Each structure stands twice: as structure tokens, then as C-alpha cells.
Image 1 (tube, rainbow, N blue to C red):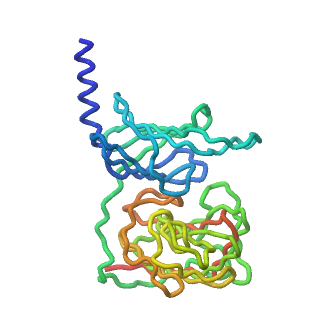
Image 2: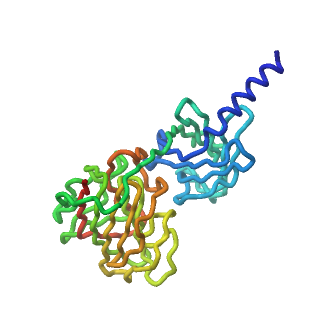
Image 3: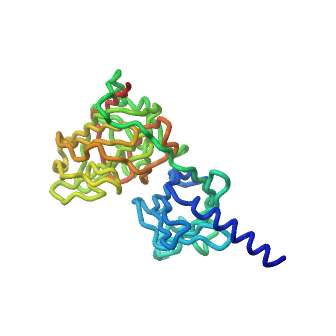
Length: 319
């Protein structure tokens, strides 16, 4: 009977293992910054298991250095990083192991996260498969009535991203600006396919970002004259690298013209097309809304340095 039980466990494990493959959008209970996570698993059921992850505590998309599926079918992956310490801990930050565990429950992937040896860091999470979005930027979309998300007078239409945090943005001299360190703000209105026209200004060494549909960050970064990478001004953060650096020097006004249709994104920075109808694979670190098949809000990142906006016009696109 013992052998039979072991065979049944093994058979269940082998049947479930390939089902881990794919991209998962993850909702985290109690995540301190109200952020969603993203996980991709490939090679489950083969000898080449791999993964990529966007989530706490890192801000970019990272290859998972250690990932496995246990004999009982549990997915386990580990990062060694400098995780946040408790507020009253003044000791130097040391690398710790962050352990993520997940199991398949029907169509969902449910699990936990915990910094090894620190049970107070435990979070629970639940993932669903990322949807297939078939709409493309094929030239058939037309503009509808523009929506001014910044009226030049007050913060109407915006709220703090994390409930209970103080509003540390203000309108001054017809400019929308943060008072660092500020929490992110999020639009009350949601959008699906759209064109965004924004004008912004950064001080030396500052950076910010615009979250599209509350999921995909177009980076704002003071990087005039540098070689483009996944963190550059106008990048789809940690996912799509701009073709050229079109940034202006710190203190000058800059313009974004961003088109998002389905998963297809185009970014024009200061009149130069730097991303041309490229596919968005999935969530970036700014994500607060993991429901990719639904309309979502805009997010303005406020905790990375001073930023000012004088225009934020959204034109919904329809057939």
C-alpha cells in the first residue's frame, strides 16, 4: 500500500508539473505598497525549468536564480537580496533569502512569501494566468473625445495609490508636482486603448514614471546623453529598451506621446519615436492592477525624486 501511495503522489505530481508553465498575474494580500507581481515559468515537466519574476523587493524583471518543483508538486523559488528590515532595526542590511512557494489549485496558483527566519514578513498571494489580448495597433483605431486628467488648478480626478497615505502632491503655478518622498497617485478614471500626451520636467538626478492601465510603467528618468537601457527615460521599465536616447537635459520640459492598444505600445519622446509598436509581455513593478484584460488607471510615481507635469491628456481610441 505504501508503494501504491507513492506511485499515486508521483503520478499526480507529473500530471500537474507542466501546468505551471506560462505567465501568472499575482495579487498579494497585504503587500505594503499595494503592488501586483508577475511570474513566468518555462520548462516545467522537462529538465530545463526556468523562471522570471517581477515583484517584491526588486523593482525590475529578474531571472529567478533558484527554482524547483518539489516531489509533492510545490513550486519553490528563492532570491537572496537585501530585504527591508523592521522599522526599529538599526543593524546593517544583510542579504537574506526570500522564499516564494506556490501550488496549483484549479486554474489558480496560490502561495506564500517569507524572508527566511522572519515569519513576520509572511505574505499570501494568488495568481491567475495572464490573458491573451488580441487587439493590435493596426491603423484601424480612431480618436474619441480627449480627457484632461490634469486641469491646471487642483488634484481633481486623482487619489493616493495606497489608502491611508498622506497626499504629498500639489498644484502650484498651474503645475502638478510632488513633494518627495511622496506616495504615488492614481487616476480615478480607467482607460483601455488610448493615446497619452504628457509634458513633464525633472530636476538633476531625479526619476519618476507613468503607469499605463495601472500595470505598465513608462520610465521617466534624468539620463540626457547616456546609452539607453531598460531603465532609461521612455523605456517600458525593465522590459523594452528605447531605440535611442531622446532625453533633454535636467530642468527642460519634455514630452511623451504614448499609444497603447491591446499589448502594443509606441512611445514618442520629445518628437522622436523610441519604441515602435512593440509587444508588452506583462506587468512591470509599478503594477497595482493585475487584471490585464480590463481597463485600468494611470499611476504617477512620486517617491523617487521631484517631478512636475503641466499636461496630461488622454484620448481614448475606439473602432
